[in-house]
Image (tube, rainbow, N blue to C red; front, side, top):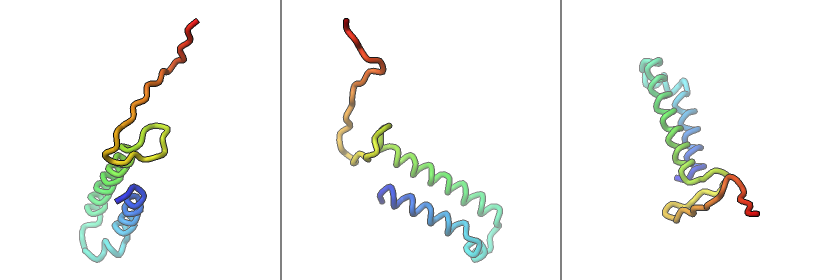
Length: 83
């Protein structure tokens, strides 16, 4: 599943999981259901954010393909001037 598809899936899962008729179908304790669902939902969002951030480096908008080599660039914070 690609990154955009994962975020759409999480959004739809949140809409479905917090939908009142779905909660009423199962006749469960509403407070406990909301607590557990919210906890799992936050965990899923954290996982997706971590997964989408693993393939990017700061300032780069292109995702790196899995298995491709990582390019390391040597840059200096201060310009070196030799007089």
